[in-house]
Length: 241
Picture 1 (tube, helix red, strand yellow):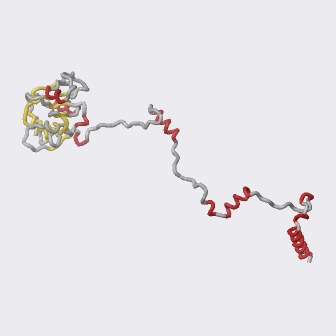
Picture 2 (cartoon, rainbow, N blue to C red; picture 1 turned 180 degrees about the vertical axis):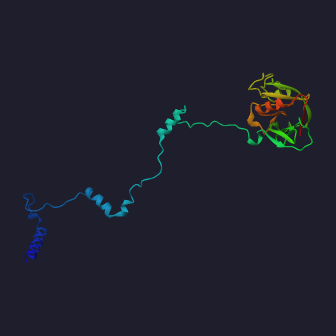
Picture 3 (cartoon, rainbow, N blue to C red; picture 1 turned 180 degrees about the horizontal axis):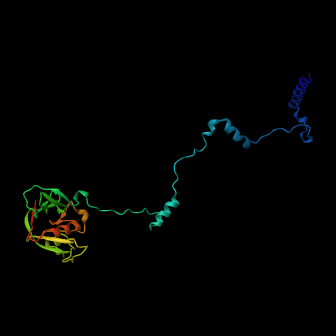
């Protein structure tokens, strides 16, 4: 009975307050003040109660962040001005197919002869026992091809270069004479062929080995022409095919 009476009294008090709110004196402490919440305070709760509104929030990306300051430090450390992309040094190398090797040989030429296959870009020094030393070479470009048999009439170390008048006419600016040395187009060694202007010689452009680039001469890497020079005597036959 007591509990029922208590609940009935509480309900009557709430009804009276709803019917005559002006009569309540909240400042006197006789009743609890009304619970008024600011919309700003309720907003987080509203967001939780309405999942569809959370989709409007910015999504967090997992894309990696570029660390520009660190990249700039690396560039500065390399001696390049900030903001400039570091340049790669171009490495010019000989195709491995044209590096020297020993191969089997069963052709008609004799040991000590030199055979140059201009189409395949190979020079063969025929040896005894059915073998040949093979070197990669550069040959005459289109319009400067030739074939024939000659003898090595002279050999020279770090030869001087005197471009023929015809070559200087085709390429104005070439010197009349250039002393032998690392910058000389004839390279470290030269084997002169008969009474012609053609030679088997080294090159200061080894990356051109295996190509048709010369004015008719047979060019080799410096280390290869030195090896050939030490094996071939004056008078050796050279067959250009």
